[in-house]
Picture 1 (tube, rainbow, N blue to C red):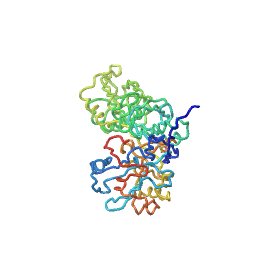
Picture 2 (tube, helix red, strand yellow):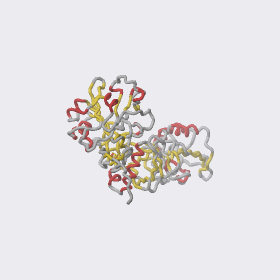
Picture 3 (tube, rainbow, N blue to C red):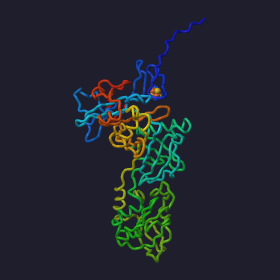
Picture 4 (cartoon, rainbow, N blue to C red):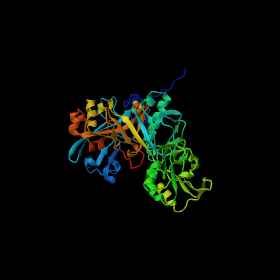
Length: 486
Ligand code: SF4
């Protein structure tokens, strides 16, 4: 008979901060890596991030560093307790992890702080590029899974809508998992590779230039082709006989454009192969692509038809063709057969091309987190949830995401949008339901908080929070500005 060694039974305890309800062994973290079992107690793994307005210029706020705090009394409005690292209370009727009472300019305020679990959320991505990333409505994949789609282009930028409840919960398990991971990484300002069906592969990182099919974008276009003509027509007058600004949306021709007409620009007999919208403004001169001005062309002469001598075309007539970023340009002179022949760009025209480039802003990716905060999490703020909604909609309650101001959409609910570059590092997490965990703060006057049925008896002073942390051991730990938390 063999004797089995008596192994001490591993004591697991249950995390109740989300519906997954993980059992976590001593020294281990739960499924989301946000909570761990430390000495038989569930603790939040990341530090609570407090923003300190004193150590930054103007309104910029930086993570508070308790290690450098000499214990001197701080003015309440110097410090702002964010929800980053605060933890989540679940189910939602429990009061939020931190309800902070503060005096701001002598008035009593309350900030209710929670790491909210968002099933209804996503990101809107603005990518400053002329290059064609994909057709409107084209699906976007990350790691082979569909995570969103291309939406309407904006001025000088292409837009993506990623995530949302359908991708998080309505598809296969891998689709939900990859969507959640993609959103979290984008919100935490990591670089993510996205593939547009029938289009380009783009590396997107908030606050950084996009990389389109391996090409790092440098400049956002100065405007559409027509706007470029409008801005610079007078600078070309007297230096060249014709200017064409090649653009996928609106190609501009200076001799026909109103800007040229006002300057008394003579006709040149030019013919553009495209759909004429109004004088000097042409749509669809080529297909969209990665070439000149977001078209698929590499030789701009392909958008020109036969020159008409009856309307001003003549041998020796000069032509400048330029893209909307000034990255591509060509100078041509009509030969005896009225065929444009390439010539070096005259020195006199160079400054005008440089001016287009100079007027282009740096191309960046912008990631806006968007989520619906009008659900059950309101119960962590007040016992009467609709009063919070009304207070937010009436501008009596201010909503921030990790300290960053949130735009609240008009209409019903609390649908918010916030710029992830204005938040502390690693502000976002996830739970494997799957859903995104985002820091959320509601700030309102104490009187308003009481009026809407808030958990007023749970309000604590900032100093108390700095000293004693919260339910999940969320002590204020050292987070040097710019360093990754956790
Ligand atoms: S997934 Fe995270 S928050 Fe949810 S129960 Fe597990 S450890 Fe807790």
